[in-house]
Length: 161
Image (tube, rainbow, N blue to C red; front, side, top):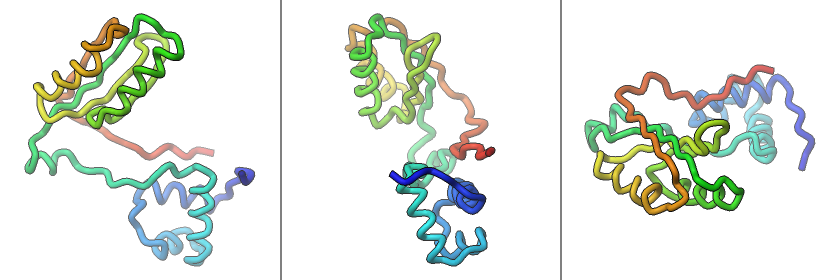
């Protein structure tokens, strides 16, 4: 793998892509004050270096609510009885396989996992809880916090050098 050294243009490209990855290569090149072919080559290098994980569309839940309802978001703390690597890995694999689990964090100290979930409604959350928590004999404690308002949802990383 190529040595990872970034210059100011690379940092500018990463920041610009975090803000709006849907912009055209031409617009991105103009913003970075480089040619379009150079911009494309640099972005592909940043991808090859593994700095860009993927490009996605971030949906606005408040707009989707008009079509499918608000849904139910929860932040869930999960503690396991046995914390050996195989037990942690097994629970993690099951959690990340669930489409309703948006985020899965292995944390310490405190609970073993923090999950961010989004389900259609409370019955759908209960079905998820049955699959992930109730049917797993290694789950010792679950504490769910249900969201009443999303004040901020930021995915961009602060790129301070």
